Amino acid sequence: MVRTIAAAALIALAGSAGAQAITSVVGGSAFDIYHSLSTGDAIGYRFTVNSNITVTNVGMLNSAATDGTINSSHAWGIWDSTQTLLSSGVINPGNGFQQGDFFYDNNASGANLAPGETYTIAVLYASGDLDSYISSPTSVGTAPEVNLLNGVFPTGGDLGLVFPAQDSANLGRFGPNFNFVPAPASALLLGLGGIAASRRRR
Image 1 (cartoon, rainbow, N blue to C red):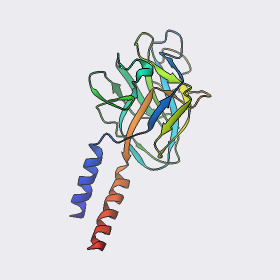
Image 2 (tube, rainbow, N blue to C red; image 1 turned 120 degrees about the vertical axis):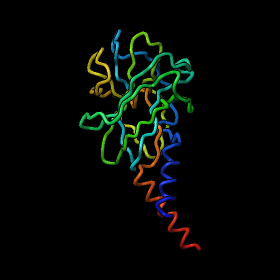
Image 3 (tube, one colour; image 1 turned 90 degrees about the vertical axis):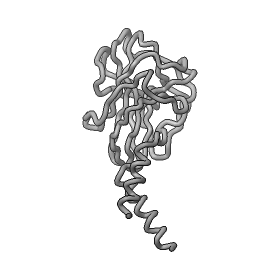
Image 4 (cartoon, rainbow, N blue to C red; image 1 turned 30 degrees about the vertical axis):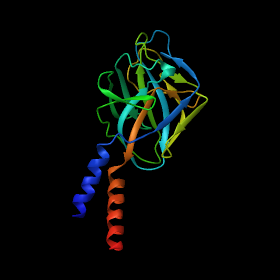
């Protein structure tokens, strides 16, 4: 019985869009690429997390500040501090959903993130793709579980979806966002704790 209820709770969590890591981006300037005429600039930011989470979906900024339309498909990636690619995919204009100022890929990521590690997330931008990211915003809102470190960009143009090794002085380049839920182990513990509390009250 306990296992059945806990499993059902995990399925429900996995099927939800989840919380947004970046909740708001205010100000800044829009850019289509970092390196001139590049066909592949991986743009994003580094971050840490305060608890074990699972990334459900990855998206990109799609607001009035960037014309409100996703015009092209964009590859994305999430790396750990050893530059290991943990998860990747493609944001397609016709296969996703809008949440707030961000458009998310329908396909689940499944990357599990933990405290004590630095992660990098980036979306690929190319000259002529008609989509833009925001650099050097005046303020950024985040979920309590997420800590922004700094923006990132690639060492040169035309590199494609590779680890963006260069750190920028600004807070972040948006660009990317992700939805998340508690990691399965954490969700299981929460579910079992709730069941135990319920039994004690009976």
